[in-house]
Length: 328
Image (cartoon, rainbow, N blue to C red; front, side, top):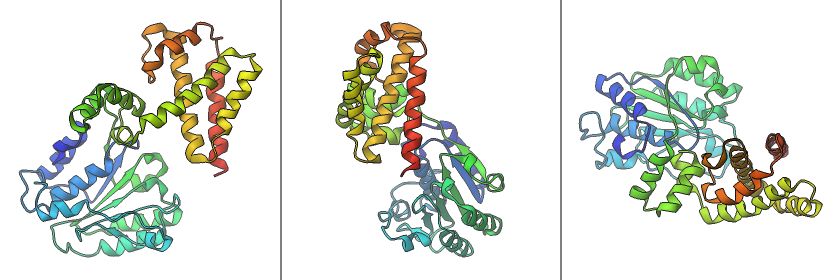
C-alpha cells in the first residue's frame, strides 16, 4: 500500500494512475537523492502488479505474494554472486546490485535472459536495477538491448540518485518518476508518530537528514553529537584564526580518523557547522540552522567572523573530500 510510505505524494499519484489505467511502462527510472525510499516505492509497485487481493490499485500487503515480494537475502559477499539477478522470495521479483561501484555486464546479461520469460507465479515480472548510476559502458550497452527487447509482462525499474550519469539513450527509454525530500517538519512528525522518536531527537534527525527518511532512520545521534563536538573545536580554532595551538589541536581532531568510514562523516559534520556559522553571519539570529541546538554557541563565533572566511573553509573541506575519494 503506497499510503504506508512517507512523503512523495506526487510519485504515489503517478504510480496509482499507471496502475489504474493498466499502463505501467516496461521501463521506469526512479530518480532522487539517497534515502528517499525509491526502492520501497519500486517494491510497492511490484506488490501491486502481482497482488492476489488487490484493493483497487493498491496491494493488500498481507497475501503471500505481497509478503514474499520484499524479502531478499542479505547482499552476497562474493563477486560471482553479483553476476546474476538476485531474487526475492517471490520468483517474479528480482534485483541487480553493483559490486565495487560497478554493475557487472554478466548481471545485465542474466537480466536480459530473465526478461524473456513469462511470470512464474504472478502477472508481471519486476526487476530493480539499484544504484543504476553504477552501470559501466559494457553493462549500459547490454541494458539498452534489454530495454528494447523486454516482454510486455516485464517491468524494469532503474533506481538512481544521479540520473545524469546514465546514458541519454537509457534515460530516453524510461519514464522518469522523480522523488524529493520531505519538508523537515513532515519528517519530524513522521519520526515522532510512526517511529516513536522523542521530540528533540526527531527534530535533530529530521534537520540532519535534510528531509530524507532513510537517512534519518539510519542516524546514530549519540555518535553524531560526539563527532560534532570534536568538529566544533575545529570551527572555533578556525574562527580564532591566529591561535596556532588551537589550530594544531583542530588538525589532530581530523587526523585521528583512521579510515574513510570515520574521516568522511567528520568532514560532513564540519561542513554543516561551517554552513550554519555562515548563515548566522549573513542573516542573524533568525537564520535556519541544521544544528539548531548549537545556535547560541555558533552565534558567539559569528559575531567576530571575518567576511569571506567560511567560503574559504568550505572550499578546503571540499578539497579534503576530493583527496579522500581519489585515494580510496
